[in-house]
Figure 1 (cartoon, helix red, strand yellow):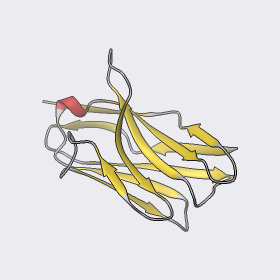
Figure 2 (cartoon, helix red, strand yellow):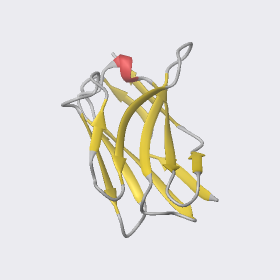
Figure 3 (cartoon, one colour):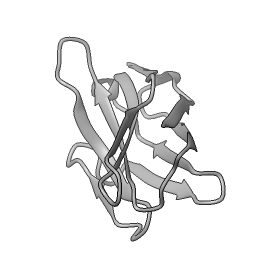
Figure 4 (cartoon, helix red, strand yellow):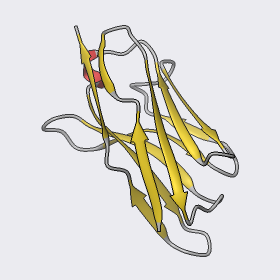
Length: 119
């Protein structure tokens, strides 16, 4: 089992910044990929950004490129999402996702943290 705890969400005005954190504990493996998804009301959950724990390669959705930065702290098994230049369309519940397919199949989600961007 891997436990994921997100934090850092909140209410911010357009143009502002927030930093989300996702702390992982339990049977964490360094082969994993960790991701941030978000879900706006009435919309499907979408991938925002991902990072490979071993290669540190990253991916960003086109909608957040140049504004969001994903990073990690290996010692703390924690992933971050620095969100700058926030827009109202960034509003939603942000979920942390952990996935590993090396040696053992692992797939876990955090409980989500609300991000609301006002005009």
